[in-house]
Each structure stands twice: as C-alpha cells, then as structure tokens.
Length: 253
Ligand code: UDP
Image (tube, rainbow, N blue to C red):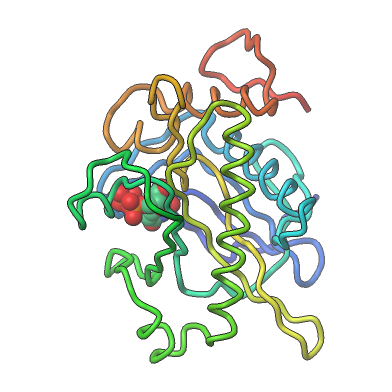
C-alpha cells in the first residue's frame, strides 16, 4: 500500500498519510528513548514486535467492544489506523506502585494499590509531560467533563482487558499509558483508544519471578529489550515458541 506524505515523526513511530482520507499509516521504528529522550538507542526488531503486539491488543479491545483507531496491519512495521485528533493527555492506569508514582509518594515498587488509579499527564515533551489534575484539564480546555467521563471509562475497560490477557500468560500488568483520539461521525464526536499499546508503554512483570518484560529493561539497563518483548509476544502466541534465532523476531504471518 502506497504511503503518502510524512505527517509526523515521533520518538518511536512515524506517521504518513494513508491511502484514503481519514486514514494514517503508523510506521514502527526500532528507536528506543527514555527519560524524555535523554537516553537513546536503536534496538533491532523492536518496531516489528511493537507493531505485532499493538495489533494484538487493539484487535482484542475491539472484540470486547472498546473502540480503537486500529484498522489493519499492513506489513511487519506498518499499520493502517483511523486519523483522529489526539487529546493532549497521557492517560496512565496503575495497579501496582512503580516508576514516578512510587517515587513521588514514597511507596515501595510493586505494592498493590487499593484500586486502579488513573492519572493524567499533559503531553508536552519540552515540559517532560507534567502530571495534571482534572482542574487543569477543564480550565485549559484540553477535554470537557463528558470527555473525562468517557476517558476514565475507556481507561478502566482497557485496564480490565489488558490485566486479564496478561494474567492468562503469567504476567502482572503493573501500569500502562494510553492516548485517546477524537473522531467525528458527522456532527457526532466520540473518543477512541489511539497511538499504540505495547511493552514500550506498559510495565509488565513475570508473576513468578518478577522479571521485567517492558521498557524498564532499557531504562534501567536490565538486559536485552528484544528478549523481553519477544517473551511477551511468544507467551501471547503472537510469535512461535521455537524462534530459530533468539533476539530476531520471527513472525507467524
Ligand atoms: N509511560 C509512557 N510514556 C510516557 C510516560 C509513561 O508510555 O511518556 C508509561 C510507562 O511505560 C509506565 C506508565 O506509563 O508503564 C507509568 O509511567 P511513570 O509515570 O511511572 O513514568 P516513568 O517512571 O516511566 O518515567
């Protein structure tokens, strides 16, 4: 499928105009960044794994009735998605304390939270995506009260789905981040899950050993990121078990 003009180049993905109006092609790069792009590397195969994993999660979400921007995977690195206006918020759902929340509140990493906690960060790289409250969101008009009700409901539904899928393969969903898109059907507007869902934007710990199977492997220099993501993909059946070349993604189709 012919790619159109480049629309945007982000840290891990590049967006191109799609073949029809209202569509976009998401190209998954091998670039990894952390700490607001202070730490960078190219990790061979990461883009392929994230493309496949994001397809898997977005397709599953659609099947349980959670609307997403995903239309179809085009090849190893590209997927066709619905164009949408991205709400300028990172929506984070946490089941266990980790990362910035553990630090901010002095809670030991891995402590189970009394209930899922949803946080919002304002999407602005120059500011380091600061944590904001619903007061900021309403006052600055980033989302309406109705949007916030819908976003909370989407976030918790994604959490239930992802936590269940991960539980089924012996992985604890510690936390994750999603982005929300706004689409218009005539005069009617609605919110859908956009961007990607992959181990780049989740914390995933092996239930038995506690081994980290997400981007913290890169952030904290804990070993091979490709190995960790391949493990997640293999457990979910997105990749065959007997990969002849460990570290090199071999895909089912
Ligand atoms: N996250 C993300 N992109 C960001 C910030 C966070 O995907 O720009 C994800 C991160 O991978 C983790 C969750 O959101 O799964 C919570 O991240 P946290 O606030 O703890 O920040 P971090 O410790 O990653 O800086």
